[in-house]
Image (cartoon, rainbow, N blue to C red):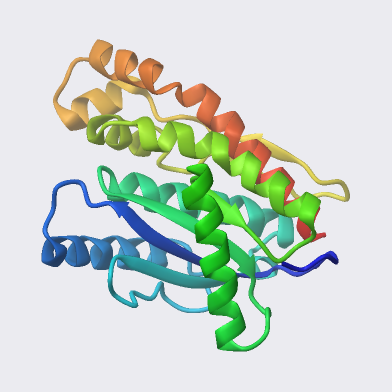
Length: 232
């Protein structure tokens, strides 16, 4: 693990399936491919290239957060939302994530860094583990994503569908200006979600309340801001 701080908006991430949701390997790989394609299309502005599928229940991608329309802070917010969208679209399949600075060295060194991050994530039952910055930043980022993971992993497939519909436009928006600033994006109307899924508005409301979606929005806010602070 690096002992010195790293300041870069270029990151590498890998996701590994830890629960297949009762699907066969063939069905799982097909689902991963469909989700990877959809998410890649939505987040082209920060992705270096489309999400790769190396096989064996893994996803790999690199991002340059400074390529986002409003720069690094905007890219940080989009990456957090991208990780959440991947997870929501895959539910009930569950993945763990690892994040490292992209320019860690040779492919062998990068592989070792990912393996080390996943070992920590597995041992500590974490949603996402960060390595390659300094010790403080690694744990701060890992911790802020832990709260998001508790919620995401606890949702049923129906809850995940409702949350995606509610937050169709995203969770936060970075504002232009001399000082860093964000705002929460408006949620979709409950009655629209109910009409789309052909259920009553009360079912949608009860489901979203049980999912603690308002807490989730603040967790995303905190992760986006923490990531921006570490990378500046």
